[in-house]
Image (cartoon, rainbow, N blue to C red; front, side, top):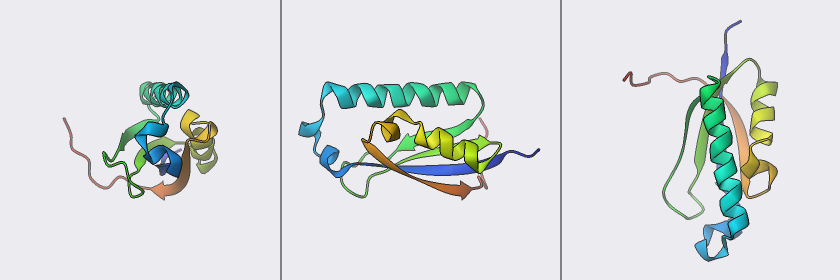
Length: 103
């Protein structure tokens, strides 16, 4: 069966746009979020993950997955520590990588 691609967009909750509001708890959640994404990369389910560098409401992160189903993509998104712990809100979109640079 052909794999499907999905993108989920992440936005920090508004209170965390102010760096002064970050505590060790949020830092630990983001570290866990990064480690989970590294695991998905090793499993071959992650194509790309990254974020914009601006800390204002237009800032966002994106995660592009290649998985078997929308259900799997939604489950991965909802179990992302940043989403599960409520510091980021996420939206899932069906997606297709059209062009990608080869190394």
